[in-house]
Length: 186
Image (cartoon, rainbow, N blue to C red; front, side, top):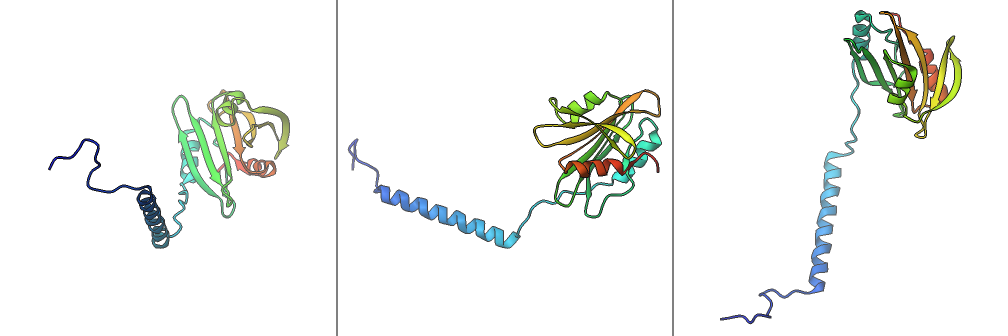
């Protein structure tokens, strides 16, 4: 009735049994993953669009910033974020994805160009000089992550200087084309 101190329990253990159990477990996991993929299909999450035009109207009605925005988005492009924040620190932002999921964003607030570039491009962004886009002179900034940005100072409706930054992972010509299509009028 008594067991000796060195005798194992009732079950025989072997390395072959352990390996067999691991193989069975891995096979069960693979079957589960395959069935789940078959039943649910490809469930890549689609980024939801937002009503960016309502935010443009709200910002322009507030009258504190110029609120640059496109009249419409190109076919297949989707606004994924848009917000106008009023108050003493009014701010405008619009984020857009093209059909290839490349990003371009517009940011504006009462701040210096350098502050906005540091905030929305990179703290160590490289100043690449200037370029003229739609008759306006913009400063060009790039970063090590592949962002290309255009930035300029603007006179805000309430008085004072603000800044606008257009930054994206799109090719530079497309960022410039997007910036050229921005308007501050209805």
